[in-house]
Image (cartoon, rainbow over all chains, first blue to last red):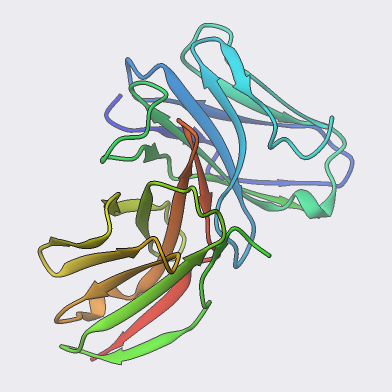
Length: 116
Length: 110
């Protein structure tokens, strides 16, 4: 596609429920990243995929968070037993390779998750 | 101490003035720095990157880097109301990961 697409754009869920957030990267981009941005904060790194594998998942806050990218394209971020503190904008980004160059990488428009 | 520090603002400047946004970082080994602009409710978009000490100009934007003092700044000349946004400073950690500051909210007053 022309850009990084994230769905849904907004998600409201009840505490304790399971949610899935989807990211469709730019076609041909092998690297995919998930960041989380809480209100008034900068984006925080969650996980990086190179192809199908998670090259670095050190930013995932705990084992309730999991992400997959089974075919090396679309990725899904999964959050189990959601808590109110999980409320944030979840940003996905992709780049042609794993190297950041002068062009940085392209962020999607994000999914705003609200846990009530 | 946070790795990237920014004043959250808001920084208010009149239209046509120079807006100066500053950022300090703690890792002396950091090599690459980026400025992203984020409009309210939107995703970050890259404005500039800078790797070497000194100034780098792109249109109305100038990025400045001083590695000895561990700060990076962004100057916006002839500020316009459309420049009102949050400006995020980021350093490049390793080959693929950014560390962002909290951002500075800029308000350009018409």
